[in-house]
Image: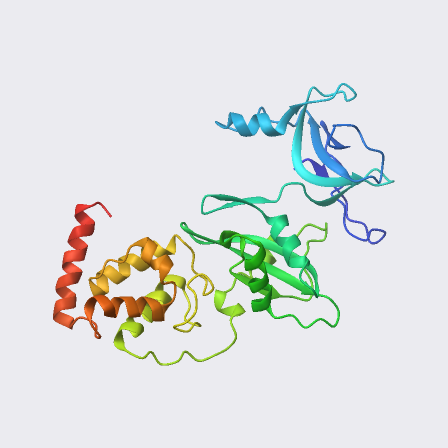
Amino acid sequence: MSCYHCIPGSGYEKVPVGRPIPNSSLYVLDKHLNLLPRNMPGYLYIGGDVLAAGYLKDPEKTEEVFIQSPDSLPETRLYATGDRGRMLSDGNFEFLGREDHQVKIRGYRVELHEIEKAIEDFPGVRQAVVYLSEQSRDDARLYALAVPAEGAALVPEEIRAGLRLKLPPYMVPASVTLVKDIPLLPNGKINQKEIGNHAVSVASYLPERSLPASTNNIEKIFTEIWSEVIGQNNFTTKDNFFDAGGHSLLFLKIRDKILSRLGTDFSIVELYQYPNIAALADQYRKRNGETAPSTAISAIRNRIARRIRREHGK
């Protein structure tokens, strides 16, 4: 905490972050570290005795955000908060959003503003916000909220289809949820806790439909495997794995489960080549015939598969 503000009964459109605490100073600077006048937006920097020496055991991050103060200011060091803001006429500071909006997903660094801009370019979208939600340690997904313009009739699935034409697969949100407004805190910051409540199953963006009966036992097994790995079952045997909410890392789990249940080892390349249940089941039938292994044979193959994984340390 570096600022405080006594909330008044009225007079502010949104609550400011306030004024610096004792032994602390707050500055609004431009990208060249020039001090900006009141009411002009810029980047927020903290100075004074409150600054830490840096980030523990992270010299690169320390060097990045703890900078030498310009000669025009009394401090020797400043901390770059990554926030944008401005000083109001009465001396209080107002938060205007984040400077950086970058996350890391499956090894890729993603600028969330780029995805938000792509969604807002879609006809009928007034505002969008994209956020990262980690379902588990190895399953992080992007989600998006979109505010429709007045009178616009938006279809989330169509927005995602448009994004797939403009963005690489890892930047396409797992779901797009339509909301009346983006949830904000009184100080104007996005309410991250409230946004997290919108991280629903990827089934939310698919139209309501009943799953058609699989044509054979093989497709039923593949359907069960997909449901377990993706975490929902609102897809058909013709749906692409990625459109159904999957991503590249989950292919490893798909592969393991197919090997365990059916005794067939599909390569990752093959899973990319046959990305829907119908195509994958067809490839299985070409190798193994029309039916799944019997219970006894399947159990033997399962034991063999488990032994292979143990021997290879998987």
